[in-house]
Amino acid sequence: MATRAIGRLQIATPFLPTRQVRTPPSPSPWRPPDPPLPRSTGPARRSGEDRRACTGDRAGGCAGLPVVHHALFSAPQLAAGHRFPMGVFEAIHDMLLREGMVRPAQVVTPHPVPLASDLLRVHCPQYVALFCQGALPPAAMRRIGFPWSRTLVRRTLAEVAGTLLTAQLALEHGLACSTAGGTHHAFRDYGSGYCILNDLAVTAAALTCSTVHPTAPDPPLPSPSTSPAVPSLAQAFSSQSVPPAASLPSVLPAAASLPAAPAPAIAAAEGKKQDLWRELLAGAEDREGERVVKRVQRVAIVDLDVHQGDGTAAMLATCPNVFTFSMHCGANFPARKQRSDLDVDVPEGTGDAHYLALLADHLSSVLTSFRPDLVLYDAGVDPHMDDALGKLCLTDQGLFRRDMQVIDTCVGMGIPVAAYVGGGYHRNVQVLAHRHCLLHRAAAEAWQDNGL
Image 1 (tube, helix red, strand yellow):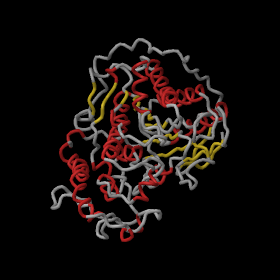
Image 2 (image 1 turned 135 degrees about the horizontal axis):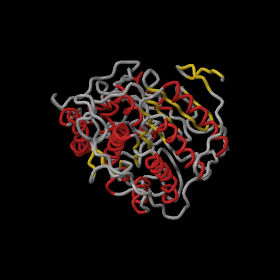
Image 3 (image 1 turned 120 degrees about the vertical axis):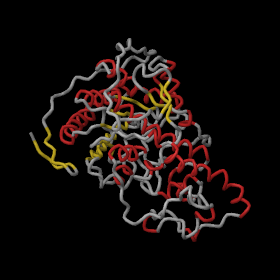
Image 4 (image 1 turned 60 degrees about the vertical axis):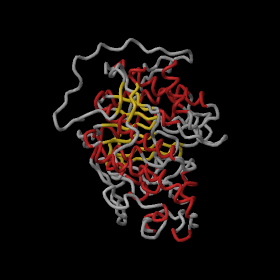
């Protein structure tokens, strides 16, 4: 047995035997096995410590593996030829139902707006406010990769809410999946790589009562009790309203260099944009009864997207109760990597066998040493050999075996898993949706095999 340093931990790495893992189902329509007998009572709850209420709407109760989905996940309309596959999330949902992998009763719809207090544990209040108001500088939106719209704001908030709900359901049932999630390139005060708010960091911090402390004090958060309730767009671009220069990435221009918008345009747009920020702030008061009151001590983020979870690593670097594990292609985006608690750089061109052997070694070490109460699993499919942005060579079978390996290992150790689809890029949305659904196939098998 060898010992090596991993982030904050000294991890003893056993020499593990090769695991026998199952192969994926055939391409023909897949049907789930008969569900296990329903339990007469749910998981034990302790008054005042567990969830007071589910934050989503579930049709008919939990009839199997909970799958979180919201129509807003695919709502924004992007220009033809845009690289981001916005329609894939609805395609995943439709494929799961059409092929019988999930029944309608298993689909859970999250509240479309997360609690502001959860978002602001890790994100700069002014950054969230400016995004919700459509007041981010053009350079900031270019770095994100999307054009701003009200629908984009609602979609972004719904995705964070869905990730939080998936984690809650995993804690309740042992395993849960989303049809979206994994926005790991978002940083505290800026977005990047199609990621605006970091849903994994928000969820991990909310469940462990952790707060990311900025290097410089944030401006005060606008409050609905003040007058005016929300700064106008003109105020948002003023020197009194933007964050200090030290807290913004260098790519963003100074407020003084931004062109002033015409007064009529500001007046016409303010009402439509401000109400999104008001809605977010009001959630902290109006939905307090839905807050998750059961907390966990330790959360591990297992990020197997082909790109490093740089935003997650940077945001949670000072949170001792969260372990960030990123296994990614070292030659891929982002060019400047952050330091996770454990980074595994996978060589370009790596195939199934080598990849799965690396994963078996490092995953077992992390779970044994850190002993998390919950795993947030980013199951990006961009390590696939045919992914447009990948650079690795996993097959469909390799992706399925990877997902089964993660879920089986965690559930076998009694660790709940909340799984998210992560990244994936292909011109054919149906092909991409099939790859993402391998996660839900693996989770459905694990659910049945473990009698969850």
